[in-house]
Image (tube, rainbow, N blue to C red; front, side, top):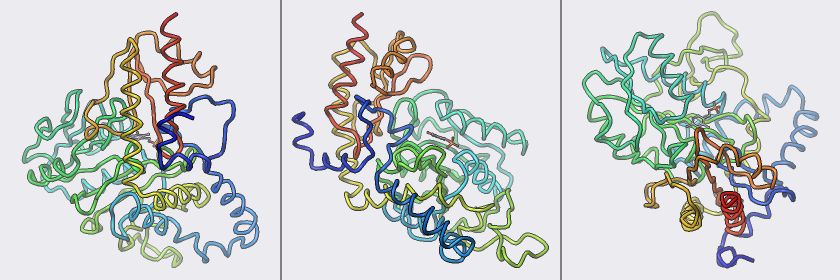
Length: 387
Ligand SMILES: *Cc1c(COP(=O)(O)O)cnc(C)c1O
């Protein structure tokens, strides 16, 4: 056993995940987290007992409330959010659209929105679409780490959209500091937490965050296509989102004329909640609660620090910050041959992911990644670079 695994108080949690014997090193938990065996049982039991047994009655017995119930758990354990401000549903992309539009529904005469060129494509594309739709100006932050001084804020700024952890470099932004500066300029900020939720602690309420969205299939292990989450601070519950569906309305089962938005977080929902899709994340949230998010973060820092030590032995460029306080839970390395080597690595059971043109991301999911597999994975990359 690797000495670092032996000394790791969290090492045994790895046994709670479904095993994949042919995988030598799974380094892609930042794209798709591994399933917990508890989730296999939970989904199976839901199908036989809940869906199969309760049938349509299930909607009155908890399914309808589930998005808010799980949302509150996520808020408490992962986000630093008091109850009633977090819900689950849609994809991150669709939630981004709905919440960007909601944030802009009360912007006075401000007509600029700000986003960075290094942000995830879907965030940029959604903003381009909204800007065109509403006749707004997009202000771009040029590539590089997003720090307060690089954000073009003015009296025209309505909304700033940023990622907590940059999907490519792994740079960890200062949410509290940037949020305060954006507020100072009289604008709102929407944080994308896809690459931080479940692995980097956040204090959304304490940091004064307005709105946040994030995936549940990365470090929250919700499974492929699992629905996203939305946080909207209570003071913004008067905002209007554009997809006015019956399940976001005041009295869905009155089936009445004319849309009246529900009070509270439920108004940000639209259609029937993805009940089965949001089950697995329950197990991961419960596990994070049992372990403690601070302990998860501590192991994440240990893993990324060890990854940096290992990749420093290779002829690669590192694009992730060396200061642990400025990085999330993945390490990105660059080499011109990575595009060609990726299929070979996957064939060997070494699974990081590749980002064009030349980046390999080593995604380290603290409760399911061991130091031993990280070492095996980096050594496999090193061996291929020698030939
Ligand atoms: C993974 C990711 C997304 C994914 O959006 P989907 O709608 O779930 O496909 C969005 N934003 C960021 C920053 C991501 O890392």
